[in-house]
Length: 91
Image (tube, rainbow, N blue to C red; front, side, top):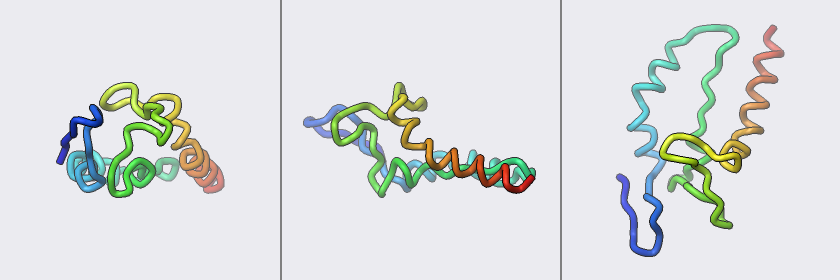
């Protein structure tokens, strides 16, 4: 469910919405069986269960509907770094 209120122009979205809207993509990614491929689950980074579109300081996390800002991508850095390190260890 996406909604907004008068006090904030940003939409309100929940983790369940994100997961159901993108389930077909996740299913396809889960079918990839390669040694050097790993799906990174980012929903828990941005949604708990309300999805965040900006930081507590009001800095946007998204440039547009689908693309992260530098601030948004920095939230993913530790997760991506660890996943790359884990894939490197499998070699």
